[in-house]
Length: 109
Length: 118
Image (cartoon, rainbow over all chains, first blue to last red; front, top):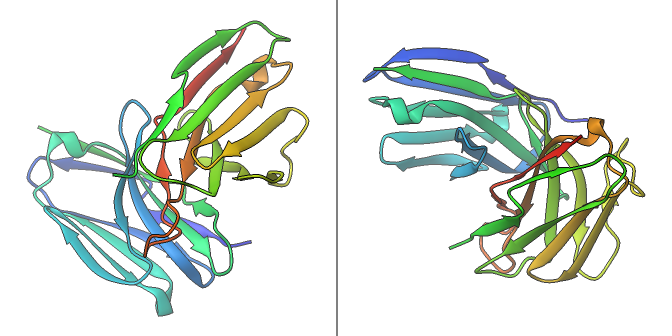
């Protein structure tokens, strides 16, 4: 089956720093989503980005589908950005999402 | 828009009892909903795909007789954990894809249900 690998697994930042999270996948996809899981377990949709580049405030994401990777950029990080970031992909012809193992981000004041 | 609710948010039950978890799409219709399970410090694992008006499709290794799924309407899917045992304790999360949107397969997630079986 498709493999979804996220890196790094853990990341500690000082408030105000920038970071890049990576998601590699092993097959063609027609869906790629980035999520932030808050401390209460709620998955918050950050981006729906099967290809191209999108920006939303301090966050932006880029997916290069032909090279099978996606990047999530967080600029000027804040303590509220702490939590686990998941990348999930959907295969062509299917609807289900396959999740990566996540990146646990901790932003220190 | 695209809000998904789950009920209950937390449940504690005795071993051998059954527990029903509801997943509702509040402001959209969803012909397909999904059920996931998450263990502490782990990723989400898809359990099954719930299709309105038809049988659910279970992932390999998931017992369909233990995890009963019903998708009776375009806004409601239920997961019943039958004869629950302590190893069924977990965080269960549902998701739904709005019908008729350009991002037709984008999934939105409920807040999750934490099940503890004593």
